[in-house]
Amino acid sequence: MSVRNAMTVDVEDYFQVQAFAHCVDRASWDTRPSRVERNVDHILAQFERANVHATFFTLGWVAERHPAIVRRIVAAGHELASHGWDHTRADSQEPEAFRQDVRRTRAVLEDIGGVAVTGYRAATFSIGARNQWAFAILRDEGYRYSSSINPIAHDLYGMPDAPRVPF
Ligand SMILES: [Zn+2]
Figure 1 (tube, protein in one colour):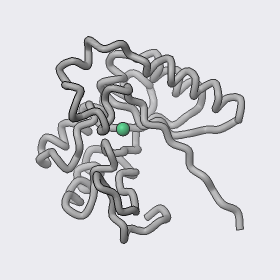
Figure 2: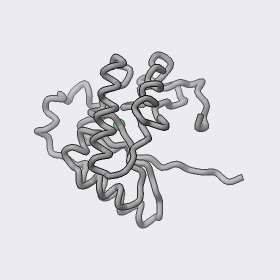
Figure 3: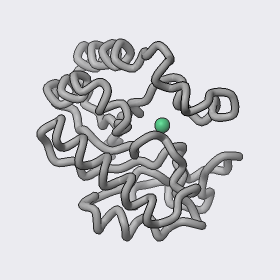
């Protein structure tokens, strides 16, 4: 039996991660030095050397400010996918706000990348037992799959009883 591995990357800047949410004010994001373009370029070069193709879950916020990296991801043959607009946790959004977020992100990514965007990963794997309504909205908005449930026990996310294979 062969094992299929899936490689994925979250395309976000260092100041946008959940671990800094308590000490980095969102209003300061545009004033901070960005590293995302340089770091994605490093990853693209490593993947090219290793002949690896991956899915890049990309924030709309990043795509709007760094459209060139979106085009380089696509040009290198990787899958362009959505990581939502600005790393707001899906489980902190009401359904209508979630819908606007995933709609806006998909539209911007498709416009810049020139490819269909059908994959989605919620910020901080923030779809779980309490907000599974999100899947119907993702389907309505043109997404085909979600990589937003982590089948583990963790303080910030996770559904320990979820299947450990794609479902
Ligand atoms: Zn992320």
